[in-house]
Image 1 (spheres, helix red, strand yellow):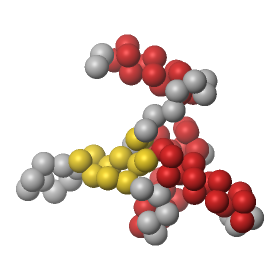
Image 2 (cartoon, rainbow, N blue to C red):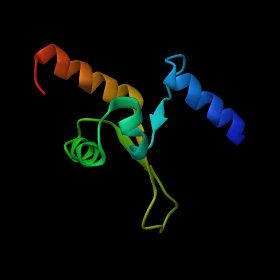
Image 3 (tube, helix red, strand yellow):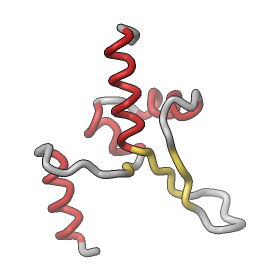
Image 4 (cartoon, helix red, strand yellow):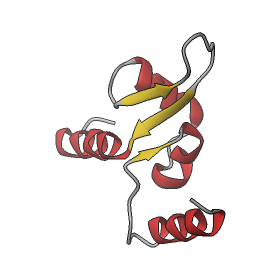
Length: 83
């Protein structure tokens, strides 16, 4: 996938036309206004779905967050009045 394609998808997501299925933690502030610390607290509390892509034997991988799980969590907070 070319960088032009990724940039077009990013612009479309910002305009509400296309929502990604998975995002990286660094993209949480842009999509949801949730900072790094809060993001990792939600991950640790199993409030949002994530996965880590890494090769066998590798210590570090790429963390991905399921976009829909974040949306569902925020809707739950809205409906229950918790924040």
